Length: 135
Image (tube, rainbow, N blue to C red; front, side):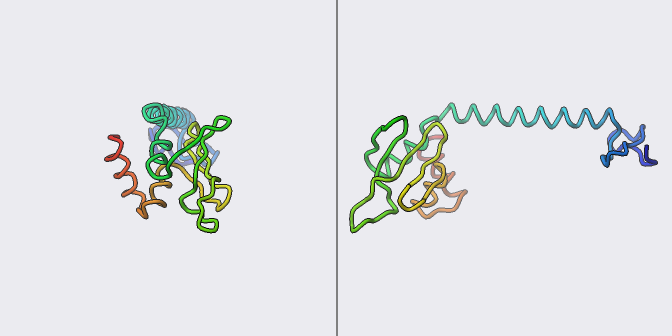
């Protein structure tokens, strides 16, 4: 044991493991961190369930027609231009909330799609999504 006392309780000496906590306070801090992570993941999952098709809703208004193919959606990429024609290499994967164009390499999520398509910064894109879809 070291001569330093625990920074949380101050009553017991800190451990030699490099943490400034006693064994009991270290365990308490670890438990609190795990609980906070679980709460964050639960809230994130709840948000995804509220708007499961956000990416598709964003893309439909800006890309045009999307076709369902083998569990993913395919459409024309707004950033590709092959001899004046739109390429059909843009794929959307709503379960993962991501899109990817196999021709130009553009990829991201719903917020990144709005940022790139509308030329907005992150906060502006989030505000636009909130206003447009009532989030």
